[in-house]
Image (tube, rainbow over the protein chains, first blue to last red):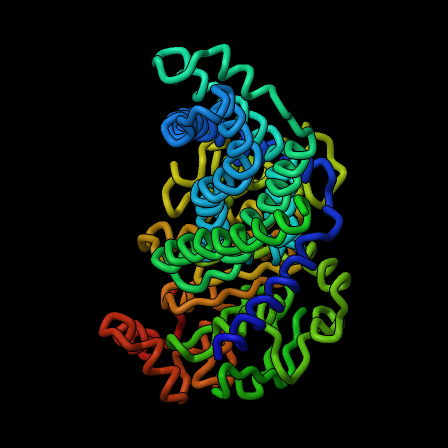
Length: 249
Length: 258
């Protein structure tokens, strides 16, 4: 029963995506919506990204310093570990998990409300492919902006660690700076950006799918929003494992 | 003209439309009436292609909607305007933006031409000075008028209205009815109105189709409805004391109430 319903949902999602990924009817209108979505989904997420990353960067730095106190560990290893945790996991997977709550619920509730207030029917009656019109700009805009958010997250996370080094006596600033520069592997940056791109598609498409197929009223829009966040979080974690295995091995 | 021939539609094995046939005439206000659950909303959704009947034909001036491909349906829809029960205005657009939207999608008008056409449509429905307001900032009656302006922006050949008076006070309802009737005659549109507002039925019903339990039970107009012998229709239309008295008055005076 569970397998049957999962397959049915997956099939419906694929058909939905087929409708979404079609050529826009009017490129000018699409361009305008794309810019709007960059602002709404991307730029509006910068403050949350910065705040979370600074605090998490600081916490990672403290924990690394406490747990790595050993005569055989060099002092710079705290900076190195902070950088690699941010680069490998936090600024892609954890950040996207957090953003799935903000962006995912925003998309699901927006499209869901449009469904229950017949705005989507109005688009269809006008002869517009509503799935493509509403969803494609969101997916492409978030994909285009997610690398910016990842870079912001890495930078502000490292800044959070620097705050600990600068304002406490846990680790000398020079050692921290040396640590975040040493043994740098450029591929890790690409790896985190590739992961974030995949996660951005999951967040926007899954949330859009749940919003688009809402039936009922306000209560159902709320449920769809919750389901969208839960489903996209699980998928992010699943793809995190798959991509890590594929890209780092 | 829209002709519906013998359409059937079921949901979960329950037949909602049981071989309904009807003709909706050009330049007239065609009303679909019936009790809640009678199938009139399914009928309306079938007409515009939001629901696909299992059997029958829906002919738009001879073109069968049910045998059209996706592109043909999309093209047909540019000839259709629709007024939804809840107006269905786009929340993120202003009043002017809502009316401009179909023009932006389907015409090559310049920005200035679009504005001019949108303002003309808004003036036509009696809305001036609300251009920059958002749907949430205007009343229900004004929202309906904006929706009518949006529906007529592309000069549609067919106009569908799903319960245009729901949630409106009687005075505003009459204004909306008069507006729909005027627009229908002025632009010679085939207007189909789904309603259970008896003021609309007796006021603008030039061609009335009564649906009961999935069947088309009666066809006529606002003058003929007083003489109906159909029990279900009579119970439905003249359910209140007021309308019963109106009926008695009309029959005794042998002329319709204006």
